[in-house]
Image 1: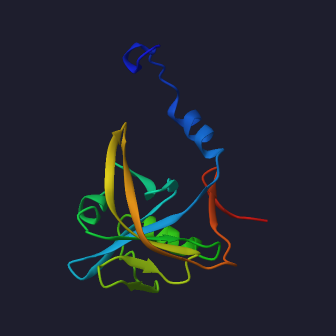
Image 2 (image 1 turned 180 degrees about the vertical axis):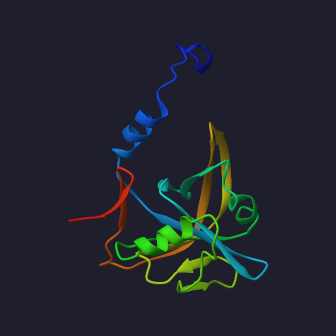
Image 3 (image 1 turned 30 degrees about the vertical axis):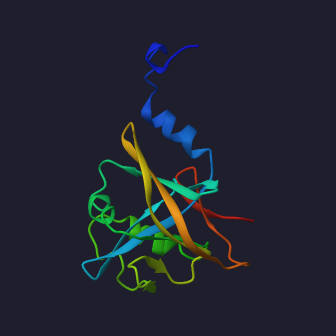
Amino acid sequence: MMVRSEIPLLVPDPNRLRRAYGAFPTGVVALAALIGGTPAGLAASSFTSVSLDPPLVSVSIAHTSATWPELGTAMYLGVSVLTSKQELVCRQLAARACDRFAGIGWRSSEDGAVFIDQAAAWLTCSRYDSLQAGDHEIIVLRVHDFGVVAEAQPLVFHASTYKRLG
């Protein structure tokens, strides 16, 4: 059996690799919480389910994120699965220099998790584990509560653009 340190190092072209990763469509979520009474959040397309028992999901956050160091201190985080009608919400939550929640409808739970109004689904989560992985941190979250809107269509990120299911 070959261990990780014995595997030959290949250095792919980052632009070609980004296109290859972009061939896989993903949903888009907002990850948010109240920090000092003010909503803080970000958009992520690296969200995935991990386990039913215990109920776990994960999201990958770039080490360059200016939001995660503060957001990651929250006891509870809200995960909102964005809908096909929320592309502008997603773009605003992904922007670097703006009030990310200006004009966006949101609500918070008593424990400080923040949820985007009219999302396809929402989950109340707490940090369960994390793993440093290259230029990202993989954050594993434990799901404590959730809700789903049955007829909502998700926002999809594919080939570096937002799309809707046909």
